[in-house]
Image 1 (tube, rainbow, N blue to C red):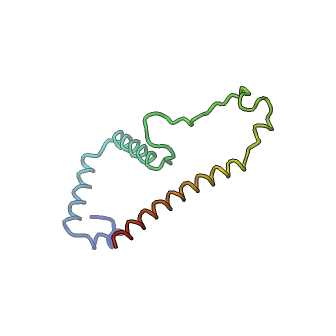
Image 2: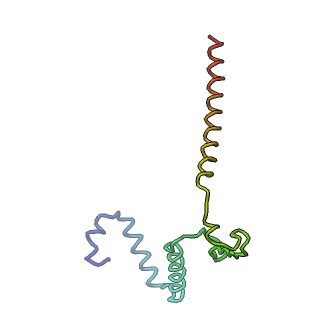
Image 3: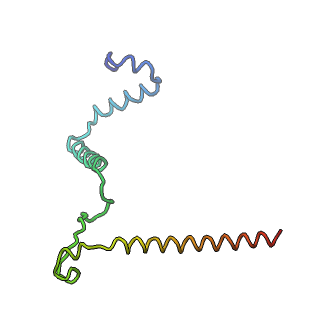
Length: 124
């Protein structure tokens, strides 16, 4: 029925499965699938495989994604016409601002802690 090279595989299969496979092969040999439908199926399968294997760096959507572009025009308002002045930055002022913010947060934590402590001491 099958080629002898496949005997070691066929021997492990159930008899009903081998019989069904043989019947399907005989059916296809009597009523073969047209070559045109095989090639159409192959094209669909190939397209599906390409879609699965395609790297997806952008979310899937119907529109081809375009990379965002930002256009900047320099009208000289921010720099007052002198580039080195634009690069000047007052780091001391920025540091003072950050320290003040941290102190405000720390102060609030201390106030909350004192309130909790006073509530607990009043209960006991």
